[in-house]
Image 1 (cartoon, helix red, strand yellow):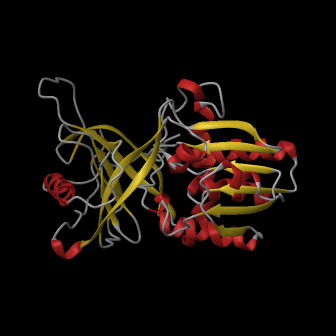
Image 2 (spheres, one colour; image 1 turned 90 degrees about the vertical axis):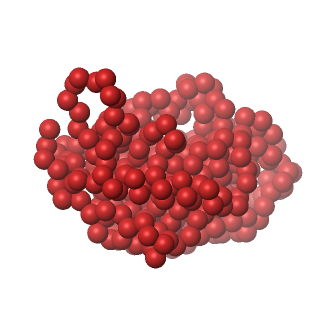
Image 3 (tube, one colour; image 1 turned 30 degrees about the vertical axis):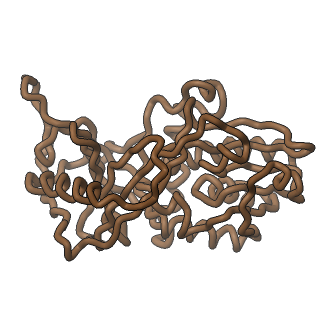
Length: 337
């Protein structure tokens, strides 16, 4: 067990409160959808339904979608949706010399992707149900999730950076084995991973895309007929929750997430997720805000902030901060992959 390095507590007083925001993650029974189909004479590539893993899955899934488009060699492609999945797919296709137009009813900073926690957390079981044999393998997802963001670490304008991350659960009273603790909780995992500041990242991607000649059109589609009339031989559907109505996908459902944003505290250089009986709590530091979250309400599509959830988050993180005695050290090799 390594000695802890000094830790700075997150300031949670009312003077540091900025605002509370709510977003609806695009949940999907059976997992995210990667598939192809024909709409009239057009090729449609589906890339949506990533739930709360949109940033982690953005590069692996966008690369798969871009490969399907590239194989058909279209002279242009339309992308439906301007969240992180749509912009990432557009970035890859534009880099391959394909003319790209992005259609969306909302662009950054007004997308659900702007509200996301946006830490890259890989895992073993992304492929299940109907997507078990479609798209990149779990190993490919885990490798590409970090690799996709790595080139953006070099420029501050992208808001992509390394972070020391700790995962925790409550202490088990009957456990006899030695346990590393943090904030009075049992450390279940710790590693360095990538944190993304969505507002900086999405704005920088859009700037890159504009410089590569990508066009942006504000438009909301409610019928397939509208898509069929677009002047592109190929489309990529990154419409998120909108795919439920647009393509009749009855497996789509909202997952409500509420974040409490605190004023920036640049001295905070660690992040954590604490899973406990009262609900999940997480803290992610960004250059623009400290992000407190952990709300995961399936089937709830209410966009109004709930004061009781703000109170839960502030109280819960306050209890954790009261037990801060330093931050676990990370070995150089402790990088999630």
